[in-house]
Amino acid sequence: MNVFGFSADQVAARIRSSGSVARTLTFPQSIWFGAIGFCLASLLVFATVAFGERWMYRHLGLSGAYICWTLLFIAAGGGVLSRLVIGPGRLIRFYLLFSIAFLAYAIGWTAAYFTMPNRAGEWLGSIAGAVLMGAVLAWAFGAMRETLKMIAVLFAGNSAGYFLGDFLNNTLRGKAGMLAWGVAYGLGLGAGLGAALYLAQSPVRENLSCS
Image (cartoon, rainbow, N blue to C red; front, side, top):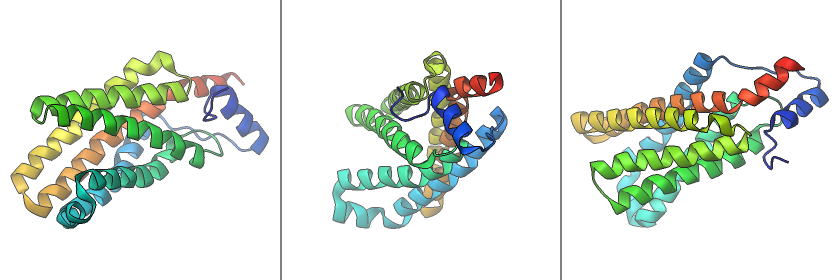
């Protein structure tokens, strides 16, 4: 049994028991919703960096600040992205799943970057984060056959958002640069997450189309 309750049979059973009609998005809709929704979450997190980074480093330390930012991403992003999940009873289930997936992504990225604190480390972190997050999401939704595609879209979205944001930050500098980085990063990773969640739910849509 799928521990998160996101297998095709479990989702179909919840839909039948609730008497509701399943709402599904198209692939482009999922990408746009993920991009815009996660952009807002990212902007919130990057605003705390722009306006409170020194305070957080002074009172929380480097590790504490990174943990705080990770938790903010989970809290803000999980609620928004849960809207992409098919069927009722998804919010708490998805928050639990997204917490694990985003923590895996954050661990992969930071481990790679702290080991190699340069541009190569950033690229390695983007790959490691995408692999870990994609694998967790694919397993949770019972969509292992989509794993490579999910990793690819997560890597593409994360890399585009992160490196474009880095360029904007270095160009604009200051608080404006940091906020621009937040927007770019949120749009990029959010688009990747929207695409990945659409692919992850392929078994669910196939089950619903046959029922």
